[in-house]
Length: 116
Image 1 (spheres, rainbow, N blue to C red):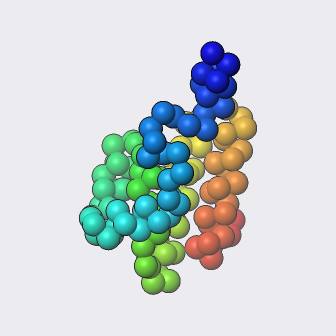
Image 2: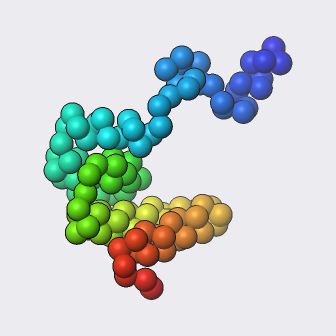
Image 3: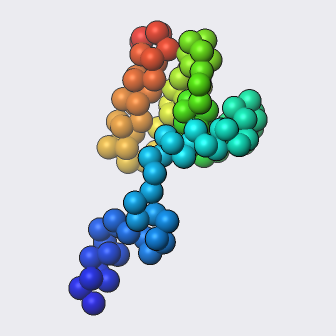
């Protein structure tokens, strides 16, 4: 019983053996990009953004960022990520989470070379 309670509240293991010691997320993202293609993923990011699903779009923009990008592509992706983070932060009710999103936005803007 105690083990079950700890597992429920600590969340370190969700019951799926694939998630016990998964590869790094960046490595998984690179493989997804290799299978689907970066342009298709970026197109999907814009589609999700247009639907107001910025939180989901953030997951896919990170996949695109895991790919090999030249300087201009990386800058455009970081700009897009900053816009998505800002939009998600605006919707967030938690002040702590809003602050995390705000700081994430500032970090992404630094990566674009455009600091506010």
